[in-house]
Length: 344
Image (cartoon, rainbow, N blue to C red; front, side, top):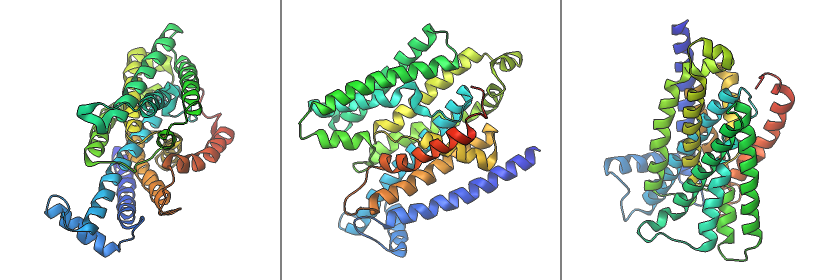
């Protein structure tokens, strides 16, 4: 049984990584300026051997910027997808996604405040908006946790508290945007719908490294997540401290979501689409589901990023809008056909 599980996971990951590699080459090849696959592979090899692009080689500079962008895209894809997997297990409902904790709304408010106010932290000006977004996300999370705990600390309380906090914060964000005629308004709106247009190598690393670390930690809790699906009482009988476990995992998921949205803006529905698709491929065992969702999350977001860059080039579509265009009908399908599968 264990051998069969490992074999299935190996096959899924092998096919997934091959697909991801192909999409990465496509991503590095297309854009405002197209570059042939052969030239891209040569440029990538040159960048690797020289530890970066040559300053006097414009083509390598373009490929390098696309590589940096793709690293961030994969990091966000992994982070939001795994967040969705864990939240769906904790709530025992396939219709929830990472944003039910109010984290994305808090991130949006933090980012919009500094964008519209023109605030800049002198020593780290490039990171002013991400820092504000991260602070807003974590503040919203702790408000959600406080409300949920005061209401009894059950899974449904986290959902309801997150919805309340999210709606309240979103209303403030809407008021700020609609009452502003500032030139920064376009940047604020673009951030709300997600964008990787201004990604740097430092930002990409800040995204992907903690995302991978947290995902590994959550993978170590795969067995406990399987137990949680059986119900809180059953999990308690099996020796799991359900309350502490949920607090730890919800904190990890909220940090994971906060990091994912802090540098690129809000990308909705990914944490809904990917976990459910992965579940159809490998089943509900989180030992398979989490790594499969990591690979699939990278694939889906890279594909969406390619479309966002080429659909209206030389302009670029907000990637969050692209994912939402796919995610909205997918959510309707889940709500109608799958909503009764979980008792949460």
